Length: 601
Image (cartoon, rainbow, N blue to C red; front, side):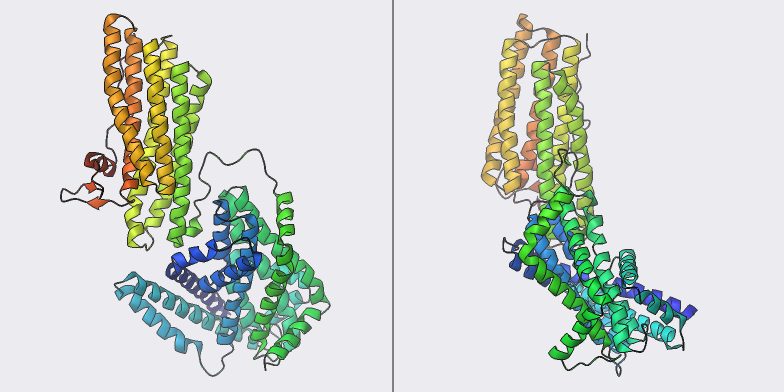
């Protein structure tokens, strides 16, 4: 019994690990092709379903496809209707794993380990000794295949020992559960939720069926096995539900659609299982389409067919009325007034294994972060120029939001940097890191301005008419620069970045001119000295914000690439200001963000 238990658990662990390696390797090898295939999920549901089927066949994981779809819908790259259609295809694509398991486990004259070991050996050698990323990826795929087959072999042997015993109590328990199809559905769903892999749970059902785990009568064994497979379809939706916990309402709706589709499909088919009509239909279909008659040796193929027929039929029924499923989801999860505005919502951890998609999600969040930083700046300037306490109180809230963006995006980029990346992506990561840091520093300077505004109001100081006019002109110039920087980052617009640099040059001139003008006003008594110091601190912070925006613009002009110079600093191939580029690479190492200001009198 001990050997059987350990053999089952060890085999399952190897199968899951091998499936994970295989899926990750295939996703890595697919690269931009995976992204392009999903991007082609247009308004035609049939095309979207076929793409979902193809992607899932490619990466061998319906859970991975559904999680990616949740992320894409969350990021606004797919509509809910498109995403549902892709998920329908993912349910079809995942059935290929069952056919693979049925084919391998059904072999009687060739041990699985005979070809599992060469896969493992070759895959390991390629991963360790391969010099090119493509060779290492191929090694990962082969190693995943080998471990998957080896785990299957261990489970097959363990189940064989367990079911070969005469009057095995294990077989009796399975038959007792199988006699209540609804209970078998729940058991299959629970097991799949626990191990987070419908492929593994279906593999276990097939191996059990072939080894007599559901009895020696093939027809009765098929009837018992089918509800477990139906339950697997429900259990596999838990992965998308977990991924949707930190997404916006659109992502949650995609996960809900996946669950509803599978639950409704099982609810329709389950009465046919009670009436024994569905098992008979599966047997009739397999016999008509192939020379396989129902025996214990071919039982695995019949279980795989039951899985495929269910998913294909359910998709074909739902596809023409996918809009109705979308409306049902919208009823269950209606739009609320409050949305997740204060934290990133598109940084899907499951997309890290598809770096091109992960980079897209990061850029989207950086844009949201930039707008939060701009709002913080607008509120701070409103507070200091109009003595607006309400605006002042909101600055720290916006700054907290920007800090949250910085923390989450930086953590996400660190995790992404640990993946195998294309050289262009590896070169882009430092620019993204520094862009995030520059936007965060801008929000810090906004807080500085807010603190200056608070001091101005506490001391009941007022700016002179000249100071108000100059501060207004600087505000407008910086707002134009900020808008151009956001446009440059969002669309990789070099022209907008160059316009931003022109604004930065103007802001630098303003700082010098306005400081001198204000010193003159102070010396002539036009302006209160303490108000003058406050104004100079305000102008200095505005100029430093321009510097950070210039750093970001330089990154866009450089094509999001750091190019090393002989001095070890960064340079861009555009001949723009090297000092700003080097400053950005160095992390803009000005010590404290808080500005030294004169103490209040």
